Image (cartoon, rainbow, N blue to C red; front, side, top):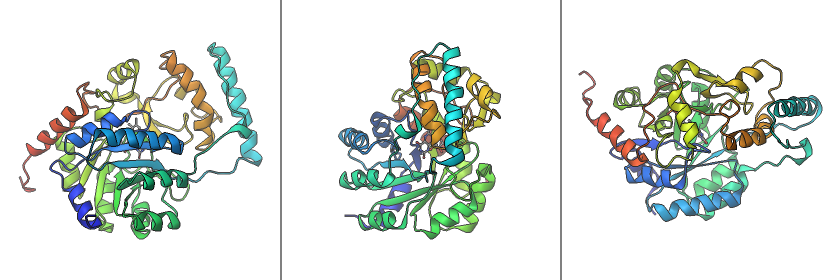
Length: 360
Ligand SMILES: Cc1cc2nc3c(=O)[nH]c(=O)nc-3n(C[C@H](O)[C@H](O)[C@H](O)COP(=O)(O)O)c2cc1C
């Protein structure tokens, strides 16, 4: 097998130096393969999906592309549901039941004792068995035993940071690549240290992380064209990761009404909210956000996520945009419906059209 450091260098020196962002609920095997076809690095989002589902998705992706792709999962800590948190869970469930009844939606919310979670270590078994060569994680870092195990298997490890402190931590525990996520980014904050959610803008964060670590960096947040990608390269990114640009692409799993909603929104309707999942995420403000913000009915992640999930699933079936989460970042791309390959090749050409000389 090719040496790991050569492999990393080659992955990050693809002509475009682009990474297709893993986006749970949006990314499909077809999107990952199309990104690979464009010369970018495709990333398959596995979030907290059950190991059997992870296996199916990885196998489906392998059928569509021969090139390596990254898999991505949530490596978070799950607080115990006891004491006050359990009382709060039941109060929030009652509140959501009343909301569903008012909206005439028949929703069965899970009882606290019926909740099921995926341990990321079980997902790792599948990732290793399937021979995945790159793994990115968000919401946390991996435990030392898993890191050793993955390193022994030659898997390239990528962790997400939202502060310099988190970047230093990821470097210290031996991550091969650090994904630097600016506050502009669509979707969840990948933060994991100190129980806080840093809100540092990409310009400040990327430049300062570059000053402090020598690990290869991928920048994520607000990249929507050649100029923004080039700016990230100048600030020290070895590659850039794009998510929002691909939300309406042909291979996106979003439904037509969600794509329409994305196109209609004004930039001022894009907010950071923890109301859907209990972890701040950037997306469209709607009736649900307005109702729950500051309501006292927001549980910590992943409980809010598990509790609101059945409501969101039914609202989605009914095309009710007021009750579902639609994530997107601060930059407003064209939300093109072209293929992922075309969008990424276009971005690549746009990057090339900017002068490479930093003084120009
Ligand atoms: C719909 C959506 C879902 C996302 N899901 C994930 C995910 O599953 N794992 C992850 O590491 N990042 C996820 N992200 C964050 C992206 O990896 C990336 O940081 C972000 O899209 C970059 O900002 P941009 O949207 O402005 O391009 C998601 C982003 C969006 C928009």
